[in-house]
Length: 158
Image (cartoon, rainbow, N blue to C red; front, top):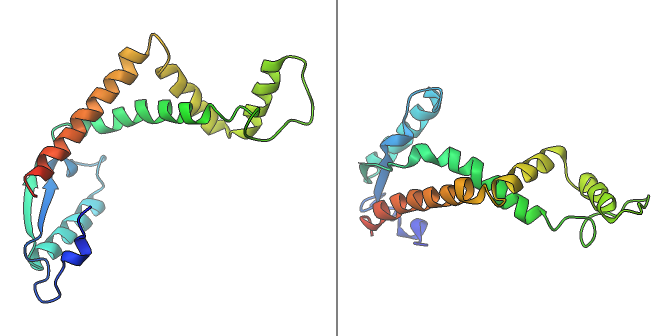
């Protein structure tokens, strides 16, 4: 990563620094609260007054970010939390069950909070066979488009 702080010069302020401001980030309420938009715009004005070059840019796949997050994050959490089955990680149960799966389910239920467990179940379902191509793979492809938006904008700045 570039040394942003090191690039600042006390005598030149932000002269020579370029700032890209995505227009899609300033959509009307309720998505962006007016107070938040006002505070961000004020910070942008301060950067401009200190010599930064401020440019409006477009990140066309911004609207897809939240749905992609809600598909990918639980699936990845599910994969990461799957190891906490209580056999290798987590706490052991005091009581024992003759059925292996009941023991593992009991340990996992105690190890994970209800919210984590729910998210893990949803994430596992979305990345399961039959749903993988329809949801998880498509979400990864859109995530790649979102990343490409950022890469294309930042390539202009280097």
